[in-house]
Image (cartoon, rainbow, N blue to C red; front, side):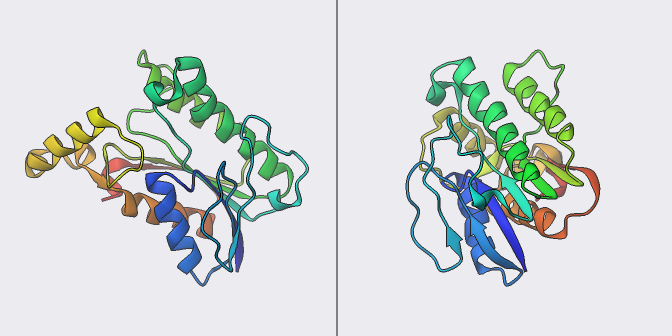
Length: 210
């Protein structure tokens, strides 16, 4: 059985990953650092942390694999600088610390269109995060790139919700890569990538996630 770290456990995709991991017999323990406490569970270790000042030498960094579903919006973050910190710097810092303590697999929830050379800030941020994660040196790295994500969020994202609603109406006419991907399906692929830890860098485009 494996020790698994999950960052982003309170988000839409992360909450699905958490439930699946806790229910999975292949997972011995889930370490889920969060800003606010989660509901207790016998398999859950839930350090309450400040992601701006992560404890570098905590013994709970010693896990087999990491799943990262951290993400925000510029509106919620307040600025592009703050957004970049959450969507790039935090995932990268977690990757370095867990790898330093022995983690061998990292699964990252990225986005459709991620490209470090993109002129679009959001896509460029995701692309730079993917690029920099590859430099950390994980034996197994999986980059999951969903398009629109379906599911009920705790945090309101009206424009995204509108886009999801419209996409669902015309879904049969859309190419698979542009269809809404249920959060539960993304969570499934992230968890399987972390548990199987297939060597190499793997990119899962939106069309294979449905």
